Image (cartoon, rainbow, N blue to C red):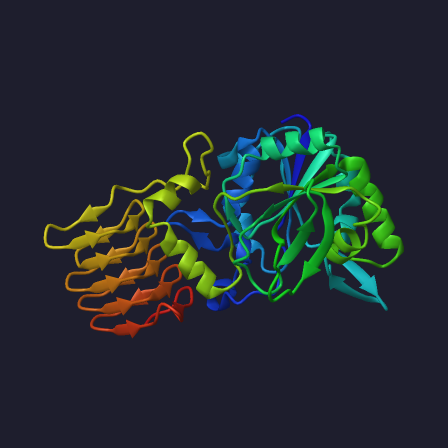
Length: 371
């Protein structure tokens, strides 16, 4: 899409993903058998025809760098434009250099990049959202409405406590922005996707810097709600913000529902990811695999039920694995029993071990652990 440029914020926010983010940002947490969480919003941008995307990094970003690389798996490796990885810029306060405190401060740190944007409009998005949204429709809605900023929101209020909520008038204009609302009756939840012009974005960045404002929600969505026309685009398709281990577990196992899987993975808007060539999965004649999402390269000799298995997972003979998420190259030993477990990459479960979590409190095992 020639008129739209993408910026993804992969900065660390308060989350309760525990061991899954011990060595990585939430954006690079594996999801759905072969993807990373950032793949979903990045693919939505690519599917809308966006050819230039900047990813603002923050914190433990090495895993994300390894995953995104040059952007060739998303057709974003280009001589001009394409994927740009923007390092974790900082600000100086009393002679101390610190990481940025919010979106507006991060954008101020990459102002020269913003000035070089070739497109007339910019879509800002967070990276912790599982969604497959037609951004070209959102952009056309923004242009036709005449709004200064268009915010994508949903009527579903199932969200973490720190979510942003909008109160809309009959025309769909945002008249109030709320946060930390326990009972947001009549509100819509923000999906943290916004479209605005490059000119307005630069103006807002400069104004926020001059007033030492760094938070997009308080400085713009709340502070400018009366002076700017903030429109809305209500999306009631599938959307999940991943900010806790329980949300990660629930949203992952939801994909075992074929109707949700069809909504997330649509042929006309494919979800793209880093390629890895593996052999086909092997299921032993004496093994069992029921209602599972299984990636390539797995070996299943035991019993697996209601699970998501990433690439290269091996389940030894006699093992019983139910309601679990096993990430890349996890190995489960003979006669082991796992229920409600999330095992990160390269975890080794030794023979005859029993690991029992609960659907309300899944057991998470850190990357490279041996149990």
